[in-house]
Length: 212
Image (cartoon, rainbow, N blue to C red; front, top):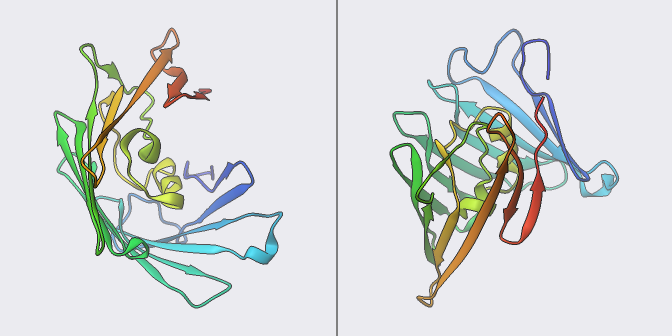
């Protein structure tokens, strides 16, 4: 973090994402400012860097994004929308055949995800159990628990740039493939004495969380 409390760097395995902000501005300042996220693998310099130039909307969250590379001329675009509670409910990325993602919420929780592209479509539903677990740590594992494919843009959420979290933690995800068959994935969370998740078994894989 910098002295303004804004995220400047995220490390994930061999990957590093850095954030460059306009001078003397925070993400809650006037809209239309552009924040650059740079993603790269330090040990593989020949692969080059990815640049995601994110334009903020009036709510302080990313409204659009231009994705480019220092090695190559390809440019991809992203669009984002939010509900009245500041939660992400729309995403479009040109890279995946103009894939559009519509996210439906019920009482502050994601209930349904619908994706369409130029070549296919997909949908999924989310369950929270009989005794929903408060999402006190604002965890949003978009791909793993909601089936929302946003690749490197997930780091923008960790930097506070992609809206607010669901009110509760998901415990069941069901996707419907093009062949009509349903696939279900269960998620089990372990909380500490302050009700923050410390471990999670998500589709058979274990994740650990440390809070400061």
